[in-house]
Length: 236
Image (tube, rainbow, N blue to C red; front, side, top):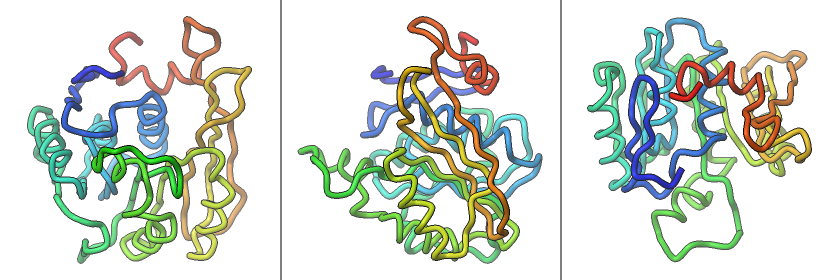
């Protein structure tokens, strides 16, 4: 996935100006979220990057998306990808910081594939640090703004490293946001989980839990993965 572009069935992601490229787990996250959304949504994509999630979640639905990205070069690529798609009339690319973003009408859905790492080995490239590290958007800050911007009946979806699962769930509870669906992600049946996808709401209840495996062997995707990604991947 290190190419300058990644072609899907209904859109193309150019990524040469973005520090964070298209990844398999981000594609899975977009497909997983899309499988849970009603047909009509107002949606906020925090840290939109290349626009991958915004474009995936605009496919085959009526939706109004605000896609906010803080890094200027990546925002330019976000605009390029949106403008080159069939969904350019329903996705609004915003250059800015979520901390400064205001809305008159709370969002029904908020999604984020946020910076993963805190206090870990850093790159010498500022754009990579901003995309990968949580200096600009900590978990606490993320939930602060999700709570501020989300409808009381809305949902928040987040993709995190598995090792931060407990931290994420504990932080959400401080903001009275509760998991309604949790999916642990494994590279194969023989690997430990390396990502977790969580759907949060303001309503308490028992969370549905599942494990999604990306590949059942070295050469073939697992059936559940193929079912989720079939609307997007060219080879499925």
